[in-house]
Image (cartoon, rainbow, N blue to C red):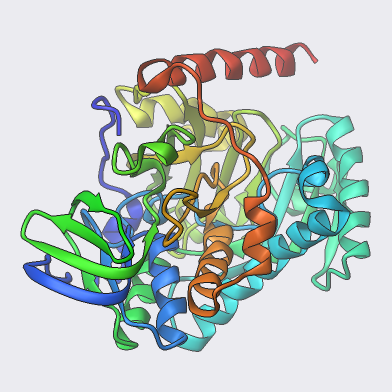
Amino acid sequence: MPAQSQHTASYYAASARQPAPYPSLAGDLSADVCVVGGGLTGVNTALELAERGLSVVLLEGRRIGWGASGRNGGQLIRGIGHDVSGFARHVGQEGVRYLKQAGIDSVTLVADRIARYGIACDLRWGFCELANTPAQFESFVAEQDDLTSLGYRPETRLVSAERLHEVVASDRYAGGMVDMGSGHLHPLDLVQGEARAAAGLGVQIFEQTPVLRIEHGPRVTVHTAHGRVQAEHLVLGCNAHLEGLEPTLSGKVLPAGSYVVATEPLPEALAASLIPQNMALCDQKVGLDYYRLTADHRLLFGGACHYSGRDPRDIGAYMRPKVLNVFPQLANVRIDYQWGGMIGITANRFPQVGRLRQHPNVYYAQGYSGHGLNVTHWTAKLLAEAIAVGHSQGLDVFSAVPHLTFPGGKALRSPLLAMGMLWYRLREALG
């Protein structure tokens, strides 16, 4: 993580149902699998493995859900994140269809997990994609047709600009597409609830236990400051915080800053007027805006992904104009919470999932590029299948997509990508 990055207290940390902390590791342990990373990837992989009867030790350097898993926008949206059709040359048309279906089924997997383990995380259904231009609105027709061809069951409907006030009280958009099979939730409550479920199945969880080095071999040894874990298999779920722990992976992911604010609690009538159907919303810009209401009637508004490695000096001041650009009626509303976090960006915006070629008992999943809430659950399922059974067809599809290492090494990859994203923003502004 860049030295300039400062994590401020988030709304989620203040409102979470706060489980008791887990101990730090002191001593030596042995298990079938050691999982490094206490975010959605690591926690759900541990849970999937425990459900299959394997013994698991999970190591987290800070607290469960401390990173992007517990400070994101809370939008549970179908899809892998970006159009996967371009990967047909790597996975074939059947592979593309699998990836599209996985983007749908992953949302169902999250909902089923919440229901099975009784996780209280403020889940609400309803999402609207917002078009910034008429051309983007027209593209929703093809998207809706594609969902129909996949047998998508939840309701979807196009909403013209003239009727969009039924969904959002803003004049910024050229229309939208409602999807009642996506929605929003409290992500920190989700990941902490899943950790409790994993612990209940026997997973040994340790917080405040950074991994110092990995000793590879037929049995992997994971070294920490005050203990070691030996395991048949290792799963790396560190994403943007992998740093130098496994250099062959860290160079393929760019840690990028993303920022969110939450207003003071709004009068219920005002909150209902902003987003009448209490949906999650997201536009189509390169530097997209995403927002929703919280359970206590705050507007939670995020976006503004930074690739420079430098956070805004004042996140609230930086984000307020973006909020007012969408909702000028909130000019006198106070911002109570402002925070940032690091997400893992890949060069092709596709998640990286697989096993290390040189160490085949080491598995990984990372680089969700801002779309990890549902996809983490799916990749965790694939990793657990591969470890428990020895093979996962879905993992084969994901790992067939090649990934570039960012050029320029650690010092130059952020500036180079920042320049590239500036070009896309300029092209968007001119188009």
